[in-house]
Figure: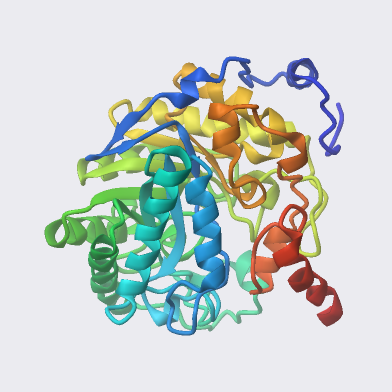
Length: 437
């Protein structure tokens, strides 16, 4: 078995052969027509089955409004032809910001977001005659924020950020008070023209950490009902206050052993019994769009985003990258089976480079997933959807090479984008990381 080799497939048959050798279920088909089919999401419409995942650019203004590079990124995404655009994480509270340039929506800057949405719509109509369904991601960064608000002590993760065992945990009252901030942000997102709001529950940020807070006492920890309480309270409060579609990007599993992980067994392997219960509960509360992720880029990045090069913050992948891709695709498939009446967006395609379209088409055609999402791949290749849907197909010279440099930039709280394919903007900020090292 080959372990952690760079992407070297010259033909789709090479990809098929490797999947067979690794005993993977990876579906592949050359006809990408299924990706052009529209579908209904909540009360909206998605023009095709290709989407862009939320990827932070760390390029907002000091007041949280979109900056020039924010506009540039989203104009490029809008022109690129994807039917769904999942806007990056926007902090609902100053204490929940991951960096000083993270976006944050407020009554004072909502018009700046509205200008951006209108510009995205105009750009898309002119570029490909459609309009993306826009999802606004509401977040609190928790332990990975500037203020280090933790929901529960986890020795392994505490050690990574230098937290002592007596470091204060965010209180039940503080958590309950955040609900109003989520509601206000949802109201402002609706006013700015977004189609849906996402109650972000992935990658061990605050709400995601609550899902795994087995050892936390009080109203938000311990039992399944308590660990999911915050999601229910936010969903119910938003529904009561705002006429907007609900979405959620969530971890299928954390890859942390019990009693610290969500969707995991005592070894940290996936046990989806609680996540399956969770998606049904959220669907009953009005969530109609689910974006399936896994693990965390801070703890097990080879699971959340298979890569070739680990960069300065990672480690060499401990498994064949194609195995990681297959795992993510099958996690999406298994949760889609639980949600036949809702729309599910899948993760794990960027490592496949220019062959991602053929795998994406097969997963949609076979009912594994409804919408295929690209994160790092969209940073590198914002017009991937146009090339898949309108020809000539994805180009190797434009595709993400999973070098992890965009993640290094974000982890350093610097401007984040593709250093390789968009070097005019992002190469110099990356060079500055070397100078600071």
